[in-house]
Image 1 (cartoon, one colour):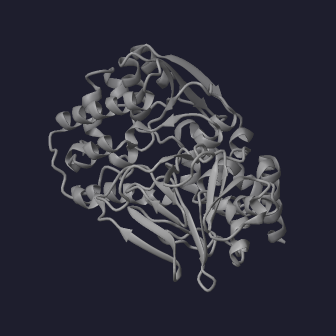
Image 2 (tube, helix red, strand yellow):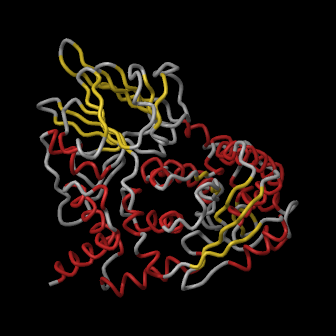
Image 3 (cartoon, one colour):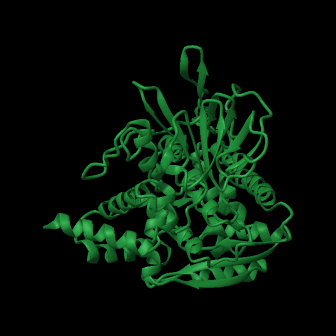
Length: 475
């Protein structure tokens, strides 16, 4: 498992990071970083993009209107300011010892094992995962900074002062959608999605897509091919099933090459430590939705030089997760709530891509696409017993009817993944909830990080350690 790329900014020295990271001083601040770029030259007035861990000269005001700009950390002499995106996909964590005034911002939750002791705080996960609310994490004393936030720590004559400013919530505008024609709304979203695909790929003439049998990844694949890219679609098969035939039908129609990836049961099981590592959560739904992508990256199944496009996020903005019996008001509120929930779940962060040195893009999660979907009325999204009605209606103009209207299969259901994984975990740990295993993976990762093994995290050892902990607790 790669160590990944990360940054820690603290007003206290953290000696346990000295052998793991490069470091610089900015007045009273200690900045530690792993694989960051742009921090080896002049270091005053820099904005460090959290998604790419790349620093560049600061270029705008911190206190401004709600922004969908990616989260960044501004580094100045004796001051650190975190400005979080309104969507808040990429997490920044914060811990502080209130009596001494020591604090730290960091981008990898598992560094808590090294950061907290340096602040004078204990590391104690407890016997079971605690119930978290909002920005709380599984590590007591560590919070995930919220969305639309400017969080500043600055050294003054009175010592270190911390303040924060919150922006109005951008999502509050979308409880009354304005687009009521399904075909027009679908066409508008396809236009925005095509622009997002082009923006993601830039000058690349070829790309890869992660293709299931569903409408979401199929739409992204179609648009990339229609926009002149040489597309290689990768479809994942499991021991419990696959969607190869459905993927092949779409590829034949749009002229994309199809590659079948056949993963073993253990390939998925041994990707669980990576999934927990990069997500920092143990929710079964979140971990298992991410598992296919994490497995593809861990096994390096797609060439690293190919930018990879996915259909992730479409279910959330296009009412793919609310069923077809809900009222229009329930669907509209549910879509806004689904987007809001991603601000805390870490499910759309870029940590795994950063660790595995590859470019992964989720075009449905570009703001113009999200805005088009949020403006679309529930009556367009769910109609005649079908979800994503507007998108399917528009796609029917580009692909065969049976492709556009194929029944929805979530990424973690396609190929029987979630059911097969659940049965395997039951064999391993009995009738306990899957979160029990995921939490012990979390604990094992914390333990090894605390021992300075960040460069040597072995998924087999982590998984075996988690199973042993559960077995010991059983007796």
